[in-house]
Length: 280
Length: 163
Image (cartoon, rainbow over all chains, first blue to last red; front, side, top):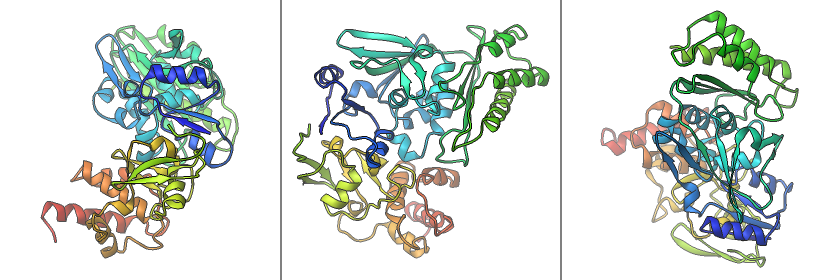
């Protein structure tokens, strides 16, 4: 086994071409669990932690770009949290402070678990995933990136470089249910984004399907009933019916963490709560 | 880069330490304990849930069980053994003893590192900030009350309002 620690993205891309199938490593919080429990014995690892460019972010009124190696700890507060409150809320629910100091959006996207806390935020914000290969940069909308449980559209010669997000104007938040308050993997989660600029309400559901789910029918139903270019009405009937429709589009299963029925119930409750919170 | 012979150098507690004849997939926790003889960091869950292996890597408090050791080449690693220059207990360690925050002691090294990290970045944390900062360190003996009391004392002493 060999460990490479490139200091530039170009160097990392070259190493990946020279070592097909090499394991890409950022924070290590997923990969090392697999290694520690003998479920994974990579022959070549390309660590991305020393690549300064991957650990940077930029914020403008037109576009926000977050390097794949920015740890969650830097999304919890500061400029990223001000620009993307839903991402900050999701980041605060990831593991423990120790995990958030190491874990990254790039790692969340690479693993592509339906329970990854960053992913519903990227889905609801219609983020783009920027992939780098010897051929250059390829931009993939999040909706096309995650294709199944722990499966994504990254090609073997590509490295996840960053995500780009068009800033929204209005309420956004993330809510999650787990078995306790700290250090939990999501049982069900909802990201809710109200964007007055594009006159839209966008919702994404985590841990209730093989991929992150955008309940498009419910979003379309709501679009016909409210004017999303202004404040949403604090209307309990609309919130309740919207939440019911969102939950109907979840595709949860029974597993070791919860049951399908509970997950659907949680989605309904969280959606209703977030809708009403957005009107305050 | 580390090659297949498993030789590389780490900077641990301000010293250059050679790691030899290792499998390069080993975690930093394993290397600290089994290769370098630093037994302070404890291994329990091996999956980042218990915090008993907490160390500082480039100033960040992380679970050393989730750090690929060979990827820490060129980083500054500080373990519980390196918190005090002369080996005498730090103010945090003394407060833990004074408050009975050490019972079985297994979680203590990880908590000590986490408390130092917290107070280095936030010298006057609120009770909720202390709880949040220590939420990744699991203790099954104390119920945390004595740990929080120890942290409170250190904060007060460092501010000069208590002895």
